[in-house]
Structure formats: C-alpha cells, structure tokens
Length: 194
Image (cartoon, rainbow, N blue to C red):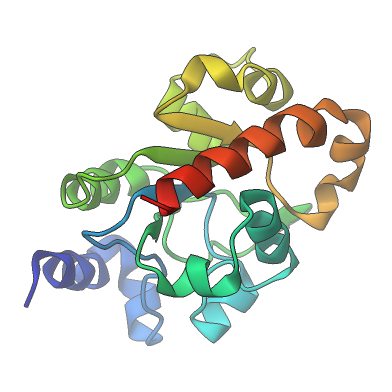
C-alpha cells in the first residue's frame, strides 16, 4: 500500500465522512507523484459523484477548454492533480450546490500536497479555494482576485468557476478571455511539455 493509498483509506475512515462511506461513496480526487498542475475547485458535483469521474459535466468541458488540454491529458496523463476543497458532493442548496464542508481542506490537503513535490502551478477555481489559499479578506471579490492573477503567479492562478451559471460573469468581464486564458493555456502547455 502506498502513502497515497493510506491517505485515501484514512479519508474514508474519518468520522466526518462516515455517512458517505456507509453509502459506499468514495472520496473523489486525484493525487499522484507525477502531478505538475493542481486543480482546486469547490467539491464534486452530483453527476461527478455518481459517475466517479471528477469534472464530468459541462463545467468540466469548459475547464478543459480554458486549460487547453484534451480529455486524455486531463484524466490520464498523471500530470494534473484534482484536489477540491471537499472530496464529496455536499448536497443541493437554494442556488446551487452547498459549500464545501469546513475543516475538510485543512485536514486533507497538506498530506496530499506533501506527496506531490513537483506541482508548479495550482489553479484556484472559485472563491472558496481562493479565500483559503490566498488568505483573502472578506472585501476581496472574485472578480478583482482573478483580474490581479499575475500577483499570485507563478504558484497560483485564480479562476472563476467554469459553470454555465457564470455566462453573465464572462459576458461582463471580456478581459478574462482576452488576457487571462491565453496566459493560462501557455503556462499549462509549457508545464505539460516538460
């Protein structure tokens, strides 16, 4: 059993995750020693949890387009880690999925990151990941954080969520597709081609 396997089993055995484990729902993430890019989003969606394939929805299609990677590169290269703020679908709320559970990332991210020393770029998708990793203040907006992305490079790149719910955000912020996406694609391609 590898250290990655031990962490996976520990996550399943954690009392915080007991309800999921009782229902035979396993944590949904990918971490591997060859990973060079880390994608930190909110939590798996219902479809992802049901199919056991992360980013398996229209948001995932758009994310891969933003990154400039094929499905094969995203899922099978071993170079892209997927370590969301929660590894389980949190349920449905009034206006979308519920927030990732508090304390989950604090407990499980660092042990996984310690096993992935070759990560060169971490994509922080959405405000939950950005607030946690960039120590943002409550007045800091997602729009301003993404607009100021260069100040977080080369370690982090904050992005909006690629959900279809964000069509209006993309329409109001054309600079994102004009300025941020070309740099995102270039950086990812340089890292993957090493």
